[in-house]
Image 1 (cartoon, rainbow, N blue to C red):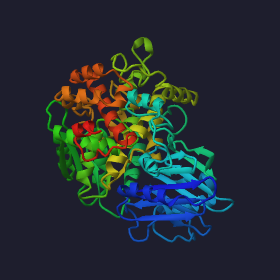
Image 2: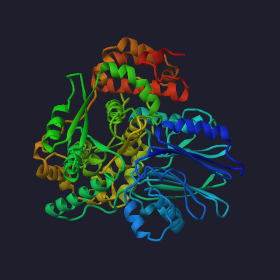
Image 3: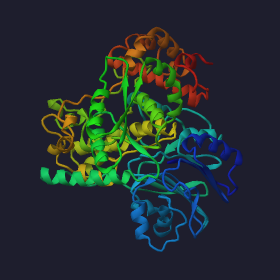
Length: 589
């Protein structure tokens, strides 16, 4: 786990050293264990290292005999199998990333097709005029961004690092901003910072002379509609897939643990980790000091005791909200107003005191159809069915000057493409979430919260073996009797019945509406006075919205505006708000 960045110039000159130094400094939080640079004519690569595998010889850049250099962020879980298959290859380290460099020399820009893991990789190949190759894992677990500037191609693990280079004018992408307001995240290649683009999940880009000249993409999900399989055969296959995935996700030369919410997904991983480990699993659970929302700590504590895990608990409360939100909003530079970012930040801070790696249950709902919206898409419209994300956060609230239009176009386009590929309605909804909601919301939240504390997050469900076992299941093995994740519930019930997997979904929420409502007059006034808010909304309507924040929809919309105001001040305005409270940050010039 690391941070990477680099520049390839258009005119063949050496990349500007001042820009490289600024980017390296901005990457430092992602790699406290070391740093490295590669210089090669028109290209420079940077890396900061969080050492997880091969602690002694795995520093980057890595090189191969043909002269290509690699920097990478992530973990390649099948590196042991790849090394065994590549017998005779002159490896110089025991790094999990080094096989990717030799695969590139063998297969060119198709090298990533053989990698199993989470990764963002940059390779500079000086031969034949010089190429820069950027590759991202199929689920988009690891982030990677780029900008095509007058100087050339600039890339980094975080958009804030690209901004720190000084090679790009800081401006707002209003279309992506409008999508963010309605969805709480932005879609596809575009984010609300103008000129910065995402390398898409599974995409490999090739650049020459500072310009992108080729793209290819590897899909995360298997093709085809639902397959015919018995429930028992499906359970056997699922058991083998989860066992294998958790086993390889535990490959590490440093201690690891688990984020345990008490829900089905993390409980399933806890069950398998407990079986595969000789020493007790260290599990971390967050709760709230507000009794108005579901608190999973007691249930998680019971499950941890049942499997002999060491259980650690953290509390996130109102004071934490007002103290930490500016720091969090500044760190989540690709903005996602997902309120789960709040306890995730505190969990990461606590876990990093003892560990460098945590496993978590992200991806279970998407692969096994756990969300209620998936049950809705199965019904025809005349029986109440509707497409996913058909209503935006600000629809019919009368707060914005103009309600955004076209914000759902990217989602609708993905749905249409998925249906043409032979997938049914349920699969199409799942795939759409895997292509946008998962990488641009959930995984951004996970990456920024953990990397801010020098912690690596691993997601065993987001693995090709698990996707093969889950995605093409018949609908009735995903959703039955009004419950999603049917097969995963069955699997967990056989292994850890104390998890009560067939109980109604408890859900996970954070009482942000109540916290905002408790300070509505002051917060509403401060948010309404922000120039970025006045550009999109009427101040009096904003204050009225905050006054009604105790209601679900109004509270959600007020939270999005508050997060956006702080994010805009930090990323677009360049204000230093990380150590300020919410009030101090909003009052700052």
